[in-house]
Amino acid sequence: MSNSIQFPRNRYTVWYKDQAGEVKKIVRRPPEKLHDILPTDVVELKQSKNEDWVENSDYSVKHISWKNPNVLQLSKEDGETTFVNYTDVSVRDRIIRDGVIYEPKDDPVSNKYLGWP
Image: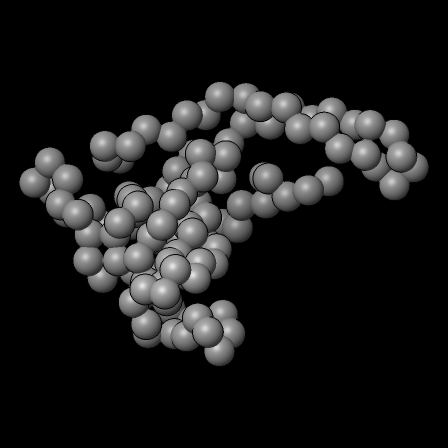
């Protein structure tokens, strides 16, 4: 996939306290980006999240985190935001990059790589 934004896959460290109160350390690597959606693209929700984020409505992509590039932060016109998986949306309008229009890949096997231990 070629697009104008590169998402690094550099390792990063997460520290947390377990239930016993001991500090634990995990080294993680972000998963590969599985779609060509970029910030400012307009997407349509495939299914409703709640009364405020309804199915078949258009929202703009506000942000995509490099640590979890397959989760999109969507934004409404009033500035309200939410997070959804890229498989929960379909692209309505995208910025044409290098004269090419890209289509997202099909829904892969669920990726629980970054699930909290």
